[in-house]
Image (tube, rainbow, N blue to C red; front, top):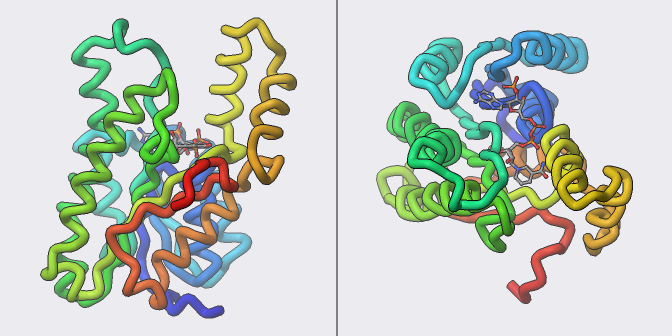
Length: 262
Ligand code: NAP
């Protein structure tokens, strides 16, 4: 299926690895030009080189910087001639007990997982409406549907973004101008973050990484982890010309782990 977005420009935040990289890859495969960001320049350049080699029709630009800072966001926006597609992503907050979190800990989580996406939406969405095309996908978490014990910072900050988006996406001045805003909710995907979180949890519980990794895998109905390419394919579809009637939605990708009927 031709997704009908070749030649568009996408800003894909936090995309040198993992789910962000999966989204950038799927978009570049469609001929979308991408600006990808991450803090670490080495992995970012390696990902850009891989995308350029695999998808010569796509221009690939890199911006090394922290997307949760004003300077990082300004640099990312400046590198993108026009933002037709925005994929919001950043690292997840640390696990822990809320009794140990200071106000600063909360502010950092809100900056990364709620306020940064909102700032980037604010910077791009009205121009999208003027051009009668815009696609925004926020990478959130299955925790929005089913909170994870110990990940209160993520549960809270992402729920805040979700509530905000639910209202904004339905504004007729956006929805009637072919601008969609959706959230993509990952369950367990095989990425560096999930591996390092699993290792830390296993350590705390006195288990081996292998044991903890296998037990989480076996707990999922699919008996496997998701692959970032699968996540990217869903993101690219939500960004496609065909998905103009899908907005204000929370799309859960968790291999069926959420046990509800709907
Ligand atoms: P990952 O494999 O660790 O990749 C994270 C990517 O984001 C890297 O490219 C990293 O590069 C970049 N990044 C992190 N913080 C950044 C910042 N402040 N500014 C710019 N770039 C930044 O993580 P992932 O598993 O793909 O997770 C992506 C998001 O999905 C996270 O918010 C995570 O909590 C959430 N999530 C993941 C899962 C899962 O199973 N994987 C499940 C639920 C939710 P640098 O470190 O070089 O900046």
